[in-house]
Image (cartoon, rainbow over all chains, first blue to last red; front, side, top):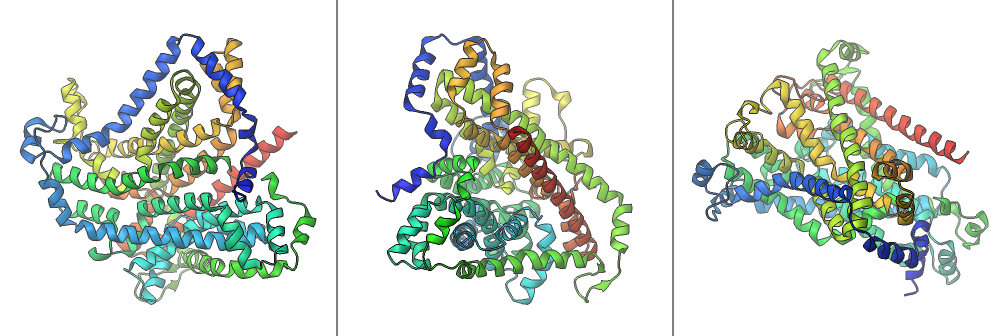
Length: 306
Length: 312
């Protein structure tokens, strides 16, 4: 657990001031008094907002398993009279869903892994190496996260056509490794610059060279933050639209998003197929979200404090 | 960030580690950044001074595209639509998000149950992880004129007169996209603001309550001033996102009906790939980039100045 210590040090100071005593006494006090009307109103308002916000997704679930006849008889708001899976099956086959999911998973995983790698390398030079002119380098990376993708679109299109990467998943992977990696560089550079110097010195005294310090000291200590970064990269890439739409034209290379959007434009689907496609489109992200929810919540907190 | 400024001597103490060698680690990242961002960006600026249809080499025409841009009413209309996007993606979600976050944190979490607050927050965040193509499908059929859920709901409660072809008529299409974006965006400020509020000592709220401060007074005095840095970050990132918005327009309306929902990024896309007027598309994209960068600089400077004022 010796490595746990620096992690604690890098915790924000504010959290440490919240000692157990004050929290405990607040909890005791909270339960002493009866709840007021305002407080009940707050609960009602926040729950109502949640219902309105969750309703569209509930509608999807409701209608994805309805037969077209059932839909015609009872409309979108009625409860399904039975479980009907033809809509899901039709959609599954129409877009070759497993293929699209595979493309999306491949692109997103590669971006997550390579994006984190490039962020770590950049941030090592900027945050720990503190090379000269790092401010300007950081500004350049920051610009990369702000620039509209449209402004890169056509030159990238020409470039990828010329080197034969157009209409391959690699084109999309490279672009997002750079764009998301730029954000990662910015975030990790500030995390690394707060890295305890004593640890680096101790490792150097033990004879570790620069490469060993990075992979055996810095990366293991920062692993939780890097995990969060990887999850973010995966979800962001999964949800990207403009670049995959522009660079992946053949059906075999398309991501889930592009496949669904193209299908939507091409043929008129009935409502149950539409709902089924939405359900299948949400499913992977939702699954991913549930699996990594704890990592994410931690990450969101960490990100917001930075 | 305070810890970032470590004393100079500790850096020197890392023996045998000259600063120069660290450059090696930056090489892959710098090469990629140059190839994928810097070169295309300048290339795009160059294209904005050319006539180019994607086949024969670009022809230099000086400022012609830019002159056309300033006369082009479709371009200005697309920027006006961007203002609606800013309202839908920045102003409303930030305002609603502030209220929701503070209700959840100050009242629901503190007076009822932290678990309930956490669950509600997760529900608000759900549309955020929804891929835009999926969100568009869901919303697309909810808003369908003939058998959509919204019109169905309206007739179920006896408001047939309000039924409408929401995405299909020019007067409501843009507002419908706006409403969808509010729905998608709310989760982001709520989550950021709630984690920012963790930093505020709950005893502050307790004390204010004992002094007779009502919810709104606590909201103004404690919540708003306590999380101002996060409000800045949310407003900046959402404004930039609102100016760049593409997916919702492409998937919901493809800019239509007519040009009523065309935004700058969608205009660029169609100029590039439909009209094959690459030079003019590049001009719109460059103009958009300039606006985005100006806004980013403006925000960052405003934030710096505010931080300085508070220190003084």
